[in-house]
Length: 532
Image (cartoon, rainbow, N blue to C red; front, top):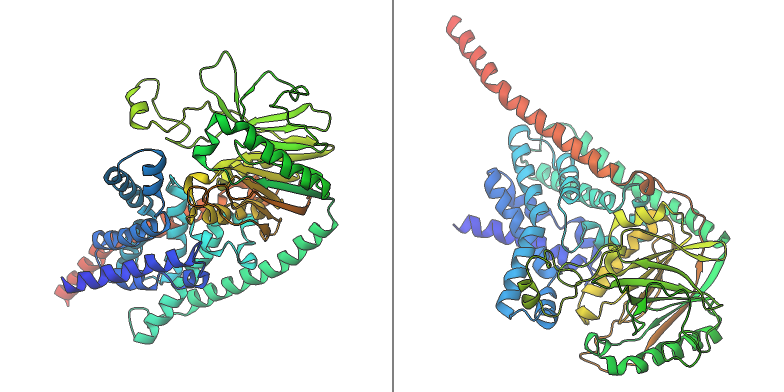
């Protein structure tokens, strides 16, 4: 029993290390050694026990990383605290499955073949992340979001490549420690470990070289001065129709300041425009209408608003672009709706769901991606957590944008770790597609991310529920309009992840063949013994 508790403690230690490596703790070096306690815990264990130890580590990661979920469900879903924690625990258990699969796979394969950890851990974890759909998107790669040389491989592999490198480091160190202790890895060739070390050095060297190359391209690309307005308006205040005129005036006032400072494009956050827009409207509202956008504004504006049609039952979460002449140059409707926040599954068939989730919206889903024109430039819009989704970024890249814009409202989460985690995940879209990304976020973190993944400017997070009527925050930065070249990742997606999945399948087949061959070899030895 004591041994089991020690192994659980070791597993939990790995989970804690990963939590500390992510935003907002940002102790990123821990990720490169975080799995060593878990590897020690599962060594020599059955597959079932290893699964449980890995699951325990994954549970700790998700409980620590997404600690803000119960308060979110309580605050805006009006789900009682026990129910919120029950939902959160189930979520954490589900999202801990990649860790369980890693631990079980490692124990099973090493128990049969004795293979080195550096050979097994990277493809196992990469394949597990590939195969597990997440409710809240998360990759081990998030721990390295602020380290540009490390994440440059995402241009070819997406975030899974960074996960792979982290696991190479952990596996390499585990093998070295086992050899020093005279364990099962003490004998045999050093080739897997030398190959792992060479791979890490090559990836880091590539990162520095590629950084220099992309920075040179960034300097040579055409530039655009972009301003963002962060209104710092809380969810409750945003839904109060009596405050609509005040919030609209606030965004217009800050936009005029940005225009005077040289902004050539201004971006407002998701749902920052407080009035719904009929989908047939083609231009700004007339002079004198309180809903008018161009009150003293003469530069293009991208903004978030609800749009509706008289012939459709549900509104859309939309992004609009209005040109200098007042015409609407484009509208994008959010494709990926947040379950229970913007869309209630089976709502039409089970109206009771509406009573269970009274604060949830039920929005219509957009069906296509689009770009906004700014002269000859194409701008790719994303709404809310769509900038977390590699697959959505690839869909958008097929339209050859030269700049990405994300409109988000993270006011739901307050001053928790979620806004920083959101930003860290968004960084990878810039590297994967080699495009600058402008993020306009209602309460932060608004940011400008360049094509190398560097965050060139960002705003602080504000929780209006704690500090109401906080002054708005703005950003004004120069972005590059990068040439619309399709990267390897934009073209081929997660081929690296599927290659790792194939490698795991081959490793499992090899282990099974050896297991099947053992009885035959043993029987042959026994016959020889009798005849001798």
